[in-house]
Image (tube, rainbow, N blue to C red; front, side, top):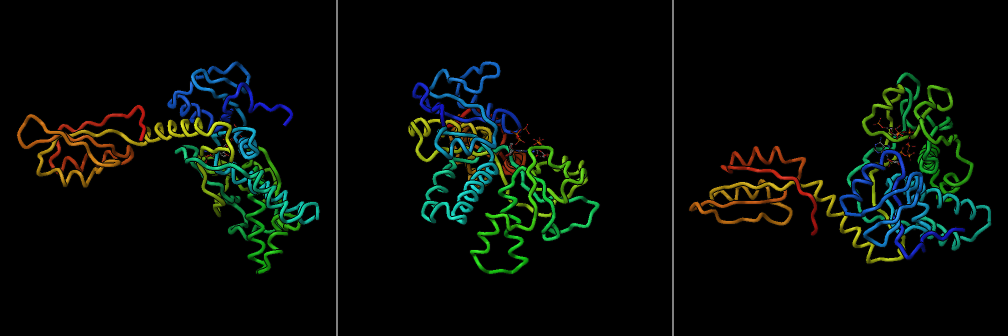
Length: 339
Ligand SMILES: Nc1ncnc2c1ncn2[C@@H]1O[C@H](COP(=O)(O)OP(=O)(O)OP(=O)(O)O)[C@@H](O)[C@H]1O
Ligand SMILES: O=P(O)(O)OC[C@H]1O[C@H](OP(=O)(O)OP(=O)(O)O)[C@H](O)[C@@H]1O
C-alpha cells in the first residue's frame, strides 16, 4: 500500500465499520471499553486520546482485507465478510494456479498470507443468516432448482462456492480436481451476478432467479415476496486481528476490555436473602459465573447472596428463587466487568 498508515505515530490501527448495521453497536463497544476519540467530520481516521491507537473507519466488507494483509492490526466486522474475503483470496490464487501462473506451493503461501485474519471473539451483535432465497410465487423450491440460473448477491465468492458444491453433488462427480476447477474457474453453470445492495429487488426486476443475501428479522425478504430455501452460513459481528499485530500487548488489553463489556451486557447482578438451609436449592437455580458470594445477615440463620446471572434468563430465575423461599430479590445492571 502506498500510504503505510499503520506506522502513523506508532499507533495500533483498529478498523471500525464506518456505516451500516454494525456501526452503532461497534461504537457502543468502544465507548464501553473507554476508547476515547473525536472523529472530525468526514475524516475516516481518528486518534484515540487515552491510548496509542488510531481508529480507521472502513466499510465492513473491506475490513478483512486490511486486517488480513496486516495493514491494520485489529478490526470489527461480520463473520460473513471474513468468510467472503477468505473465499475470494483462495479463489484468486486457485485460478492463478490453474492457469499455471503460480505453483501449488505459491498458491498455498499466497492464500495463507491474504486470508490472514484471526478471530479473537464473537461480539454478540449483528446476528443474521446468509440465505438462498427465491420468489414465493415461482417454480423454484430447492437450491438444486437454481442450478444453471441467475443468482444475485453481494457475496459472490461464497455463492460461487455454494453452487459449485451443489453442482458437483448433482453431477455426482467424485473427483476433487473437478470440484476445485468448478469452484475457482468459470466452469460453474450457475451464473453469479454481483450486486452491491438492495439485492432483494433483483428477482422482481427480472435480473435474477434467486438471491443469496442476509436475513435477520425476515422483513426485507417478506416485503420482496421471497422465501428462504437454504442457509449458506450463520454470521455475527466478530473482533479480528492480523497475524502479526504491531503491538500484541495492546491487542490483548483491548480484547480484555471488550470481553468485559460484552460480559457486562450479557449478565446482571442478582442479590437476595434466604435461610441458610435453603441455600443449596437456590444455588442450583442461579449458580453464578464461578460461584455465588454468600455473606451472613445479622438475623440468625439467614444469609445474603449475590450472583451473576444471564440477563435473558433472569425473570425465570427470579420466579424459581421466590419458590425456594428467597426474599428481597434485587436485579442490578453491571456497568463493566473484568475476569
Ligand atoms: N439485517 C441485518 N442484521 C444484522 N446484521 C446485519 C444485517 N445486515 C447486515 N448485517 C451485518 O452487517 C454487515 C454489514 O452489512 P451492511 O449492509 O450494514 O453494510 P454496508 O454495506 O457497509 O452498509 P449499508 O448497507 O448501509 O451500505 C454484514 O456483513 C453483516 O455482518
Ligand atoms: O431480515 P431483515 O431484518 O429485514 O434484514 C435483512 C436486510 O438487512 C441487510 O440490508 P441493509 O438494510 O443493511 O441494506 P442493504 O440492502 O443496502 O445492504 C440485508 O442485506 C437485508 O437486505
